[in-house]
Image (tube, rainbow, N blue to C red):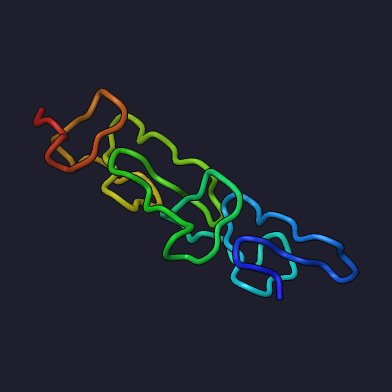
Amino acid sequence: NCEAGNYCVGGSTAPQTCDAGCFCPEGSSTSCPFSCPAGMYRPIPGGRYLSDACSMCPPGTYCPSEGSTTNTTCPTASYCPRGSIHPEECPAGTYMNTTGSKRVDDCTEC
């Protein structure tokens, strides 16, 4: 069997490293059998299992799609808690004029 973190296609002579943004359990036969879910990311190749391969997007960033290899800085007028899939808009009556906000409490009253 192909070791976790790698994949082996039919007729191969050596294992290949699993793609970034993905994880390959033992016995995988494609470069990305499982993608990191939205809200998580993996910047380097060779992920073995969801629990050790994919990281939650840190506060102040978001990861909008499956298979993310990077996180995106939260834009102005919004905030992004840990594991965000998309930015949350600051509530009516508040604003945010910097990027990378982490909590609704970061939004300033008008």
